[in-house]
Every structure is written in structure tokens, then in C-alpha cells.
Image (cartoon, rainbow, N blue to C red; front, side, top):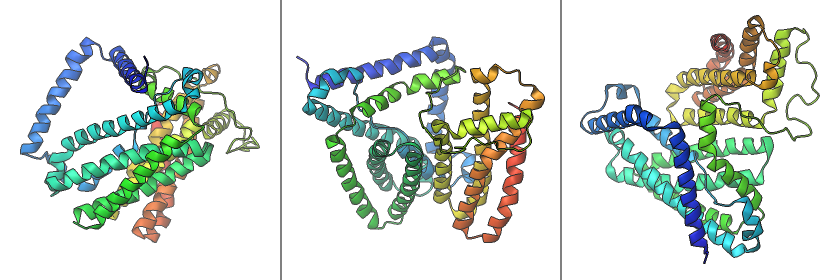
Length: 407
């Protein structure tokens, strides 16, 4: 007789088997023998060496870098709800079964977060001890990370259920920034031996209990949970296909009026093949929800990193993230040029290279200036903020010029 726990374990085993089969397609015995196993051996050897002596490159890295890694770890990932489309024939009629299944899925998520968080801190432990973090503080930080990561996974689901389109992206970015500030302040309390850390942990635990209760009792989310679960199940397969260069057909655009360029007027007065290609790229990308989301995620991640690191590193981080934004737009450009529709036209290199340079520059510049303003506000270097604008234009132009040569 089928029961809810039996159904849960059956689907969990099916998911792990599916992920294993996906890995087998990319990592056969030759790759495992000559790449994976030697890499693991080298990593274990280096890891054991870190306990005896710190690597020389550590003098260029401070504690905030490792804390930033931990924070991004807490933000990544999702909460799995093992629902399928066929469940609407049976489970949708049994609300108690769905609630019990969601409880088991949430319990699995907490257990999974415990394991991977513990594993992460075991890897980072030599570095944290080097910076004077005591074993007791590492244990407390691990516990805080488990609770924080679980809260973030459920909170992101609520954002996806409550908001749509660009508002959802904006709310996620705000949530990322607020979470970064809360994380940084809580870790500061822990390292400074302040009782406020325990207050912060208690408050966070209360929020987790509230989120868990709200997630179990939430109604009307069945079909959205099914779509989210399907995307989570196929995330590894999609990643492998993208690395193989397989073109991913994007869903049809359903918004009646796009967020940007609603009137579809010409962006450039001068009409030539270069401007036409640039205009096509800018309009297509600004109307692509997935790419716009990735753009805002990169900005949000950059802002969090600038908050976590000392203000003295602000302008250096601004240059680094500006170059990363340019590289990211370059990836979007190459993907757009591989679109089957675009490939129907015989674009000359004399057209593609200048168009790539102009497109990458125009799309990356707003984000670069925004990050520069964040640094100026954080460091209160208002003169530097004024000088930043022309420097951002120069960095954006020359980095776009270099990236465009690879298009």
C-alpha cells in the first residue's frame, strides 16, 4: 500500500538516480580515471597540507573573502518539493497528503543543508583557524549558516510565488542585499564575542519556524511547484547541454507590453547594418526575462561583495566586477549570434565586430556606473564618484573592444 513516506522516498531515489545518469553521460570511465580521480587526489593532498602550513597566496586574501564565499553558498540552491504533473489526478484531491509530502521535503532540505554546510566548513576550517576564528566560533557559524540557508531557500520561493516579471527580479535583488547586510552583521557579532549574535540566531530561528509553517499551509501553488521542481530536476542536464554548445530554445514572449523599448522606436538615427544589429541585440536582451534576471543577480552579488569587504577594497572590486559584467554581456552576445534566426543572415565580420563592441559597451555601462556609485556612497569619496564616470566609460569601452574581438 502506498503511503506518503513511501512516495517521498521513491521520488527522492528516482531523482538521485536521474542525476547520477546525467553525470554518467559527461563523466565516463576515461574522464573519471584520468581527470576526476587525479584531481580528487591532488585536492586531498593539498587540503591536508593546509592544516600543516598555509599556502603563500593567502597573504593576498583576507577573512572577508571566505565569509563572502559562505554567504553566496547560503544564497544559492532551492527548496525541493517533489511534486509531478500527474499528481493533479490523485494528490490534488488529498490535501493532507500534499501537506505531509511538503513536510517531508522540507525536512529533507534541512538535512541536506546540514550535510553540505558541514562539508563546506570542514574545507574552510584551516583558513578560518588561520585568521583567528576559534573552533567554537566555527561551530556556531556552521549552525547559523544552516538556518540562514534554509530561510533563504524558502524566502526565495515566496518571492517567486508572490511577484512576477521585473518586480520579482527587483525584490530578489533587494532581498539579496538585505540578507548580505544581516549576514555580515551577525558574523561580526559572533567574531566580536557579542551577545547580540545569539539574539540574531534566535530571531533567525523564529523566522525559519514561521517560514516553514507558512510554506506547509500555503495553498494554490501546486502548478507553480511542479514547474519549479521540473526546472530543479533538469538543472544539471541543462548545464551539460549548454557546455556542449546546444542551442536552447527560449519560450515565447508572453508580455503584452515589454518593460523596455515599448514603442519599438528606432534607437539610433543613423541607419546602417552595425546600428541595426546593435538595436536588435539590445531590444532582444532587455526583453528576455532570464538574461535580465542574470544581469541583476550579478549586480546584486557585486553589491553584497562590496559590503562584505572593507571599504579600502571598494574601487579595486569595482574594476574587477566591471570587467566581469563586460565578460558576461560578451557571453550573451555570442549566444544571440548563435540564434538560428540571426544565423539566417550573412553577417560580415566588418559588421559583427563593431556591433559587438557597441552592444557590449552600451549594455554593460549602466551596471558599471551603478556599482561605482555604490562604492562612492560606501567610501564617501564623492570626488572619486565624479571621476568614476569617465573612468567607467574608458574601462567599459576598452574591455568591450577586447571581448568583441572574440565574437
